[in-house]
Amino acid sequence: MADTTTEHSTGAEPATSSSPKSVVDKTTGLSEEVLESVEAGQRAAIEAVRAFVGTVDQAIPADASRRQGVVDSALEMADRLVQSQHDFIRKVISSAGKAL
Image (spheres, rainbow, N blue to C red):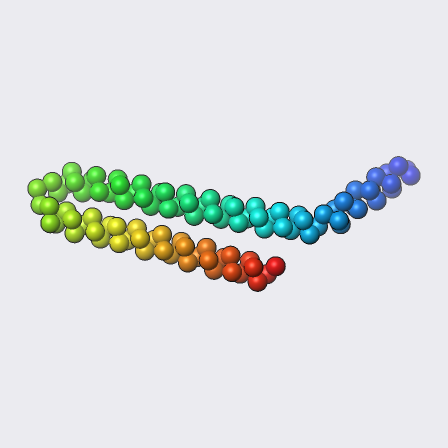
């Protein structure tokens, strides 16, 4: 039983000494996950716009001015979506910074 107590004390020491590092590691990991999520969202938005433009080209091939208006509206929507994601991430990072 003395070995069990010794193992418990030894196990507790690294956890205490590495607590600040584990918080930093967790924060770094969270930041990386958030950035990856944002990048994936941006890529998805770009791909959705590409698919949309292709669909519009097929649906409205003859009327170039009307097609351009629809495409411009889609690009504006995608831009607003990406900007919203960007603003959200800034707020998350700001809140996380204040919490630390």
